[in-house]
Image (cartoon, rainbow, N blue to C red; front, side, top):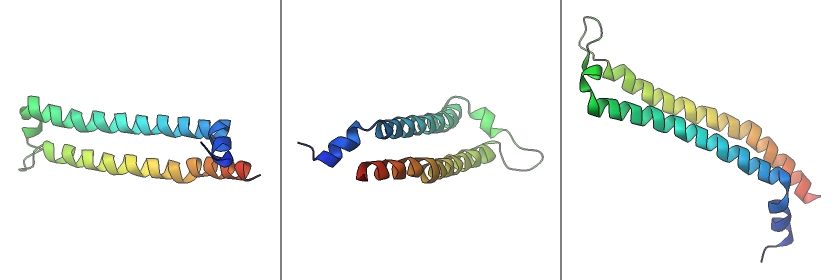
Amino acid sequence: MLDPTTAKLLADPKYQELVAVRNSYSWICTILMLIVYFGFILTLAFDKAIFAQKIGDGVMSLGVPVGLGVILFTIAITGIYVRKANTDFDAMKDALVKDIQK
């Protein structure tokens, strides 16, 4: 049995909107990350020659900057999610808490 505050929270349309928006945003970030990561891994597994190409006259292969790009993409998408969570999601949560405490 739920206490009245929890029942009120779960029934609130603002709570349901928060959960839906947060979940969809999380899934979008997850899918993007999986595409980038598995795209890199599958390309490496099935066509090593692509990443083995030398860049210019140096000794560095194409795989090094692409791998670094995957790492930087991970950091960027995490930062984007944290910014969204700290602004939009927290604002929605704060509005919801004010409504529930009335």
